[in-house]
Image 1: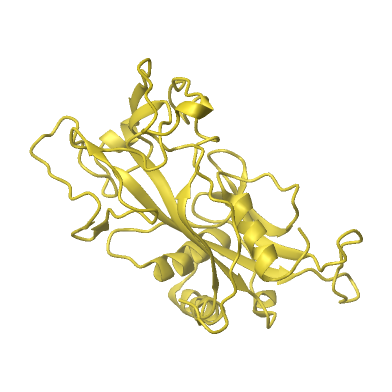
Image 2: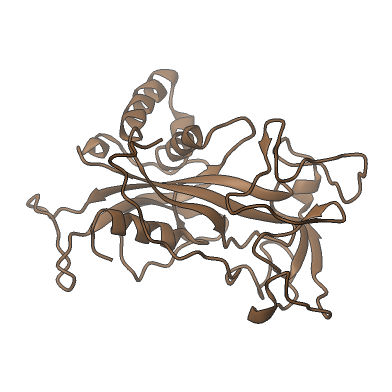
Length: 293
């Protein structure tokens, strides 16, 4: 995915507290049971823990991207902590526990059991492309932050339709797909609306995206504190920064597609409020490019 000799690394904090998904109302679902900070790890005894159970009707309707309901169909055997056919059930973090046939969230308690809105039991893998460029003023000069004296970096951000929050235009790694293929596909669908283009346009844009995505810096690989997480299903991702050194994206017209409500270039700054753990990823992009944060 990246050239090891040119790769820079970001020092991102491991987001392992389930802070965003605990003690809140589940998306399109019930209120979660309360989980104090010191009771999150499974290794800590919590006798009074009585999590709410929830599986979204959409997930139970058996869409192609969802696992069977192993809570009710005991004949189905999923191979957890392994590559199960075309589905990768390994965690980026390590091996997770499986109790009574159900995987346990590798980070700890969330206040809700079942799958919620997630299709897979255990880890649900995603890929998040952080596409960046330097900000320039009307005269073409690079914009420097007056306080940090560092150049301002911009990234392609979408506004999610489900929560209304700004986010990276990423998506789920489908069964049989690679992370690198997902990064390109999701960026094209959500930020460039390639799904509405004819085949000739798709081929042209696809070639340009492929060129930009040749070299990237892996910013993060692991667990995501996502509002959809439950005790038995959770999000993990690989976030990769692709920096537009050559001005390739001046050729592109950003257009929201798929589940994006809006898309634009957004200045990277420490005051950014974003979906799930996405602010961590853009902070990493600022680090590897020595930009303002």
